[in-house]
Amino acid sequence: MVRRPGARELIVGAACDPVFGPFVLFGHGGTAAEVIGDRAVALPPLNASLARELVSRTRVAKLLAGYRDRAPADLDAVCLALVQVAQILVDLPEVVELDVNPLLADEHGVLALDARMRVASIESIETARGRPSADRLAIRPYPRELEERVALRDGRRVLLRPIRPEDEAAHQALFASLAPEDVRFRFFNMVRELSHSQMARYTQIDYDREMAFVAIAEDPQRSAETLGVVRGIFDPDFVRAEFAILVRSDQKGRGLGHALLEKLVRHCRARGAREVVGQVLPDNRAMLDLAHTLGFESRFVPGDGVVEVRLVIGAGAGAESA
Image 1 (cartoon, rainbow, N blue to C red):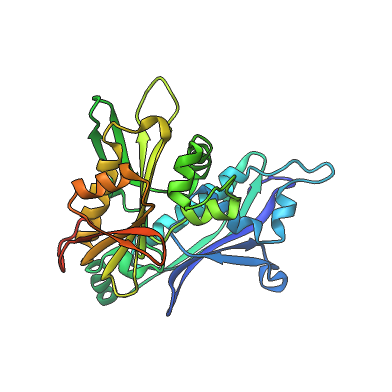
Image 2: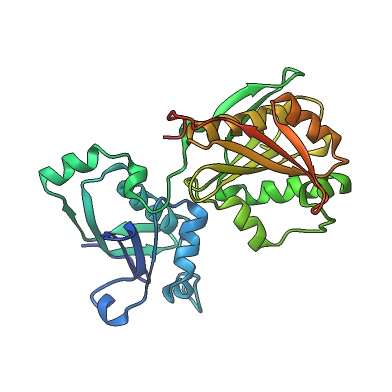
């Protein structure tokens, strides 16, 4: 019924592991899928970058890239299908198994020829719907509810939101724009450049164990820019959160650092942390003044040659990040 000469047969699936919860499967599809055994798995939710990484871990990825007289397949369409299947797992807890095989892919896009789905029993559905999606997933979904727009001292409005994997390029641009002194204040030594693996670590985070808020310029006349970032990492018991903050050199004095750090403190309090701590170089007076403005106490640590700033926020309760 469908004629797509040269299209590659793929399989896109989803299932639920008893330990890791829902997962997405991708690989070489068709009637010989089980024999070929070319497949890779990933944990939802997915975005375009994570979907491409999933595809790259299969042998069929080389066929999708094109060869001889075969045109490359529309990889964006393949990745979109993976992102959408992952989102089904996030949004619909009753879906416990999904299998699209084959999914035809060529230069014109993708087309699902056959699919099947298994759903949970009524009792299981009612139980699952009573639990937040984050409890079912090994990786916490992007917490869109934490996005917030604030006005700086000069009236400029910026978006404060959790960092996303696709922010890597903007993060590189932020680092490249820093003055040498600001690099030293942030990393405690002179760093010339950050590798892709380091940037991936900074932008692909576990929202459940850490948080990074970026400040994005909202200027319709210019492309979105990252103006600053604040990061907090929780200890295993969620008692303490250690923070670090970075503001673009040409954006200082506008209240951006205050807005970022105050946003992180509110988030840590909502997650139940009891204190927020950080280390600051003694000559970083601007950072020490900012910490004191927000109520942090400071003490010099002779052995490390740094100043530790500490803010007690109590046992905390709330659900800002829920």
